[in-house]
Image 1 (tube, rainbow, N blue to C red):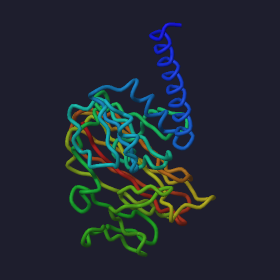
Image 2: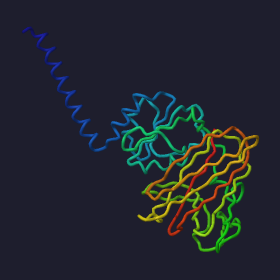
Image 3: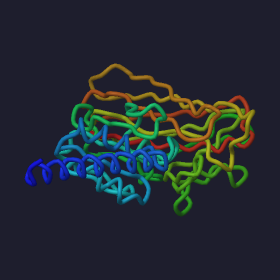
Image 4: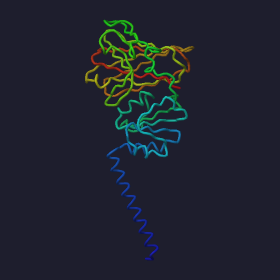
Length: 288
């Protein structure tokens, strides 16, 4: 065998061995963090106008997403002008709570639900025009209707001070859902009446999005479902009625409703057949 041919064969064999070693190493890494395979899947379908958000500190997953733009952590995303899609990647399905609170329900990317996709441009989710958590006492008011704590909930500092025990007070603050933190409006329901929210001065928007859930401090196996009935009255449009439910499970449930682009107002009535430890929390975001 000529030296040149022998050397070429040696290079090919070495490359094959190196490739096999890389493949074995990558399979081993995937067993440690299955999200590596998910990021490769996202990279194949995503483009330069998309954004991958890795919820935890995992810079290696961010690097793997390249050339698709990616970051770790969940920044404020009130204006995503020019973004086509957002992909959320998390250690667990529950850890996607901050993204569900901002974008509502998303499409599942993997079977385990640890990655979701939101069509930001197509579903008009790019720019936040109203966030109820920043409007308590201004464009968001509340009252308890019926029961022992019947009456308005006047603004007291940063909270809406409904009558009754401390847990009746409505406030916007971080809560944990299956370990994941989400800033939301804490709204403990009552069994003998309703907690009713009034949203006024709503700007035109294309989507109403958010998430609902029972926080970790209030979850227990036999807890009751909490229902939020939303009614929107928008200028020149028929009344829009929707329902979202916080079922008795850990984590949050996202929701998204398309809207006609018109200003108006809305109400949300929160009810449950059994208010015991029902530490209900929700986000309510208008986007376009």
